[in-house]
Amino acid sequence: MIHAVATRPFADQKPGTSGLRKKVKIFQQPHYAENFIQSVFDVVPEKEGATLVIGGDGRFLNREVIGKAIRMAAAAGFGRVIVGQGGILSTPAASNLIRERGAIGGLVLSASHNPGGPDEDFGIKYNVGNGGPAPEKVTAAIYARTTEIDHFAIFEAPDVDIDTLGETQLADTIVEVVDPVASYAALMERLFDFGAIRSSGLSVAFDAMSAVTGPYATEILERRLGFAPGRVRNGTPLEDFGGHHPDPNLVHARALYDLMMSPGAPDFGAASDGDGDRNLIIGRGIFITPSDSLAMLAANAHLAPGYAEGLKGIARSMPTSAAADRVAAALGIPCYETPTGWKFFGNLLDAGRVTICGEESAGTGSDHVREKDGLWAVLLWLNILAATGKSVKQIATEHWARFGRNYYARHDYEGVESNAADALMGGLRDRLAQLPGQAFGTLTVEAADDFAYEDPTDGSISSQQGVRVLFQGGSRVVFRLSGTGTSGATLRVYLERYEPAGGRLDADTTEMLAEIAAAADQIAQIRKLTGRTAPDVVT
Ligand code: G16
Image (cartoon, rainbow, N blue to C red; front, side, top):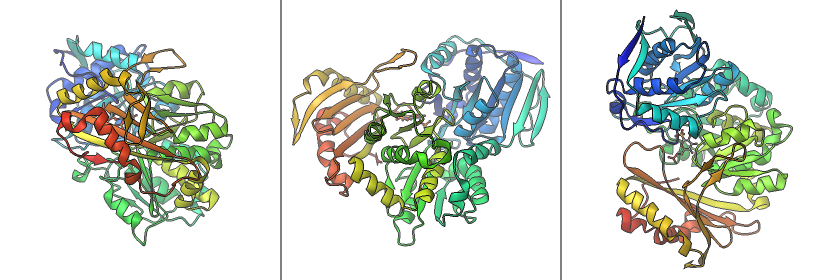
């Protein structure tokens, strides 16, 4: 029986960069998850009889919210709900299922790279029919709905068994529990030359960080590609990620980094995050920044069967380094600069303007789905290594020798008091017009602006996307506030220095960026306004 439950709006359900992300305790308030899910369903047009995909990264609260979401989907009149077995679906696998099964959209339950557990984070994101995150007009409509909601509808029944493959009927809705890995693994096998990787003799270490990519990586790397059992580390998804932060960066994937820098390092090391969309790439003795990885993958993608015909274009988020722009120029294809957030790539991919996209925040992907895809990046790297017989270090040094090198780092100041962070950004915006011509050490400001983006496919405009300060010679610093944190504000400062081919290509990144880091502090008054003397995380 369908039950209409009276409810009242919560004031804090505005989706951020990647859906609604909050502390578990907030999601545990009565009706909190239900209100948001109902608000999503209320703005989905023509859901009667349509297919909806539901899955998550297995973190604490995943199963409970999935149980409710299934019964609410039945009450909302969806014809079919496709759920990953055990409630598991990586974000890219969910995107793939939405596309493959012609679903109207999907609920992806995750707080991505944020920690999990009763005192940590949870999240709900709605993806639309192209498999990608809902665009801003949809998230704005969902938010508007959350502010006026007065009831939600739920089918009164015990939760459906999501551990057994097969179909169950709930009201007029078929609930189909599917293998979360099968169709994603098949897609990867179509895109990449598994035979070449299998016979390459490469050695790998993959850290699944006790998160969702464990089952995917085990199936693909160990079973289909034949890497020895145990090459996938931390391969069982845990509700609290083993107490770790499932963020594949040099801080949280330190053990992998140390292994890759040790004498006995394998050829290739990689990690993925909570929900499987981010990636970390480390060759023996060399870390590849996400911005460089995008550029190197784009330059070599034609070596993989799925991209043999070449790329239509490349897109990168604004704070991502300009390394990919140089590859696009050499290939004679367009390069788009978008605001932070994968949703901005969706229209470009749908319109066939770009094939590969990437972000400095460890996200890379292509038109095979509409999300960034951690394992996809790993497999493209492996395919390139297998096809060329070169090491990661050789690929990188040859790339820099040809295109020059964009030294790059991101400094994160976490848990900054929100008012101080707003004052810092506000002050910067107020001073933008005075910056051009000012000198900071040997650096002179060429231009400064607050990034705004006009989507070339639908003309929609997104403004205030981050302050860019460009120095003469192609170096720059970018300031923006994170849209994915759950407590206080996180200030991100992105530092970039371009060194042309023939210049200093194997110098120390920290040293190369020191002057820009000092200029960033002077320009934004970071120490003075936040009281911080150093960033919390440098990636
Ligand atoms: C999300 C988006 C990414 C974006 C990132 C930015 O990542 O999906 O496209 O780059 O947020 O995060 P912030 O606003 O904190 O800089 P994820 O992996 O958290 O879904």
